[in-house]
Structures are given as C-alpha cells and as structure tokens.
Length: 153
Image (cartoon, rainbow, N blue to C red; front, side):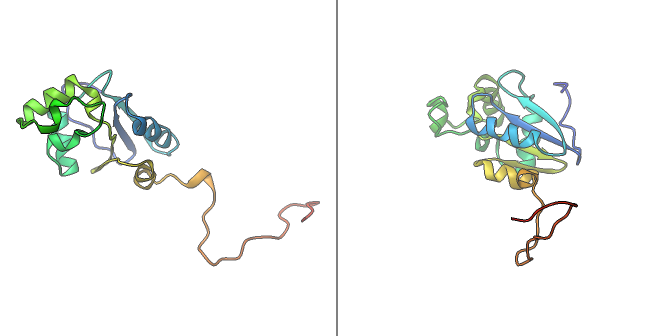
C-alpha cells in the first residue's frame, strides 16, 4: 500500500491491520485468509500507516487515536497508560511502538472494527464454520442415500 494515500475502500477487499507481536492478530489473519474476500494484510511491525491513514482508521472506528492503543497490555510501554498527548503525538507513538496495537483492525468497505476476541473477527468477516452447510434450526437432517450403492449404517 502506498504510504502517501488514504486507505482504499472496497466491499470486496478485507484490510487487516495488525502487529505481528499480537496473538489475536495472528489468529485473525487465519480467519481472514479463509474468507472469500481479497485480503490486504498490513503488518504495522514492518510497514506502518501514515498519520492520515491512522486518522482515517480512527474515524471509521468512531474512536480517538489513543483508543486504538492497548494501554494496559503488558507489552505496551508504561508511558502510554497515563499519557495525555495530541493525536499527532499518539500517531507518532504508534508508528514507533507497533506493539501498542494489540487488537487488530478489520476494514471491509465502509465498515471497520477493532477486534478484541477472535469470535468477533469471525462475525465481521462472515466466515462459514469449516465450510459446513447451514440448515435452519428444527429442519430434519438428511438421512437418505444420496448415491447409488451407498449403505446407511
């Protein structure tokens, strides 16, 4: 992703913003890759976002920049817990401390969510559990033979 542009918004693309140091981030990547959407992984430990992009992400989430930071996580600098900074200073902090973002951010089209649990990622992405067909509750299971020479036990 070019660093001088805003985030592309595409209903067919799932953007995953994560830190490789985040265990939730690693799990969310697996869920994202299993979705049918085109996946754009942004590992902020390797290539961060610009200040404009961080502002755009925060706006999409309806949050302030400092709310994106996991201030109470043990891997996040103690400085962040009680600091009162401007948005620009928080952006600079994130850009220099990628582990400050422990909760990955998913964006699809105009919708965005910061993930606290892997199950939230599944709901947002809409991955069908293990590719199994869904049937309405109360429907009888199919127990008849579907192929010739099939024996029912």
